[in-house]
Length: 121
Image 1 (cartoon, rainbow, N blue to C red):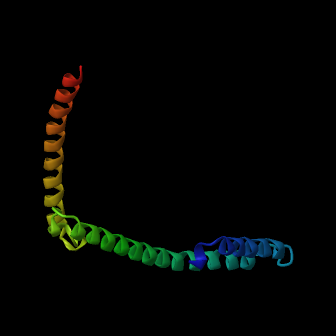
Image 2 (cartoon, one colour):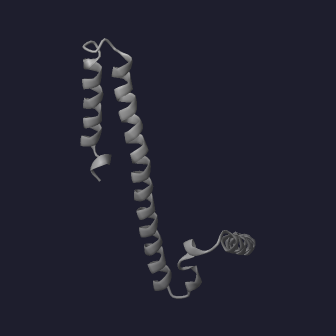
Image 3 (cartoon, rainbow, N blue to C red):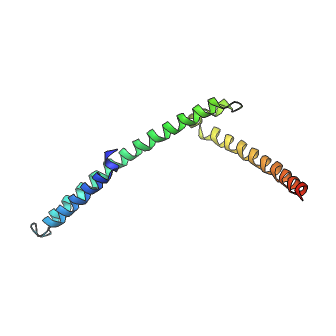
């Protein structure tokens, strides 16, 4: 994306330098200050939407990649595809289910690690 490039940054710095250099010409007036304030506010406002759009596209691409991996892995639960479409309540239930699975795996892993280290002694 061009707006995130070094050239865009250099252009923004150039605009600021030109604005500063024109200060003495305009006697550092309120209008002179208003120009940069208005311009930066408008640019910031527009960038918020641009950044949000970019993040949404990135998240969608990541979801599609993960969905493909879930579909490709044998034994994976296909119900996990398209989780982003679930309600908050359904996501909370799934999160609690994964927490229970994690605790169970940690409990089982602790016993097997201790048994393994005892055997190696």
